[in-house]
Image 1: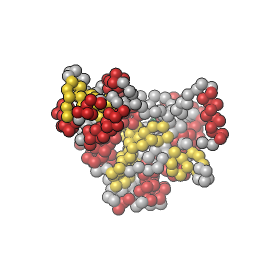
Image 2 (image 1 turned 180 degrees about the vertical axis):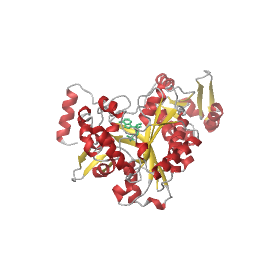
Image 3 (image 1 turned 90 degrees about the horizontal axis):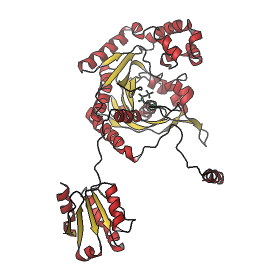
Image 4 (image 1 turned 90 degrees about the vertical axis):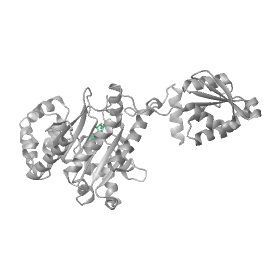
Length: 434
Ligand code: AMP
């Protein structure tokens, strides 16, 4: 801490204020740990079922990586990126999403040698300076699945199936897939012109941002949430009417595959997603009773070319984990519960406390979760702590027990209490917990 920051912190505390987390950035508290444990466990389970490897890329990347890939005229790049200069003078950004970093890593490490296509997943925080509201934060976590190195429709369907596997494993069964195709760079050109013609006729009714977008990137108008732009959008040209033969065949193949697998979907010709790197299939998962999507993704066949000068077809999705916590809470779906610390260790003399660490290690080595409150002196306050964590068994070690080489087991479920030999500790606990 420098002298200046020390003074600033002191002045702050003098005013009687407590430091608060930054607006839009929330703490994940112990009370929600079962949700996050479920996400990690389920992500690994589903990924190994579908053959995805784990990848983690840095939170900081060159700002230009996102500007080039997500697109200079997108909201994320124009308004929401945390960009700053490092003390060394590099322009960096807190990652607003995971795909660009994963593709950077794929190209940098030539990951195609690993498997073809490469299937990877990641789970970590993303940062966007958005207006905080329900389901919209400035720091949020995404679980992403990416398949890199294959342009077949099979993999568009596989990304959708892996996501549904994750949702179902958490107990979310009522998801609806919204799906669209954005075509390739050839057929999108004609659509772009049609959009431009259509919205130009209503230029005055567009919001100032969309008036600007009209010239540079009219597709982004379809993504605008301003009421006036949303109304205009409903009468705009339909991209599916402009797909070239190849894009049409690809989209048809994806729809056939998901239909064959019994997936409910809705065609949404206005779905463009907020990132420019998408082409062909784009999709989003929504759920009844929720005002926000739980995940979204699509194909990004040109991304590698934009940032690495060679074409590598790819498809992926990212799921918003804070939103999934909210969905589970709203729908009253419980996450997988943690194994409770069933055994509480209480020690009532300094010597007993010293001995207790070794005994607890023995129990833990046998995979028995055990907790303690050894900073407390009286048995009464240690029993209170045992009650707080809802333990089933309390072990009590005092001077007499050390002398006899024994320990007391109190079963809080029945109130029964018994002395057992320390040599038999693990065996006896296992018997009582089984
Ligand atoms: P995107 O990266 O924009 O394609 O979004 C993918 C998913 O990430 C969305 O469907 C949301 O579930 C989640 N997400 C995006 N932005 C936010 C945000 N600001 N706060 C919380 N979750 C978000």
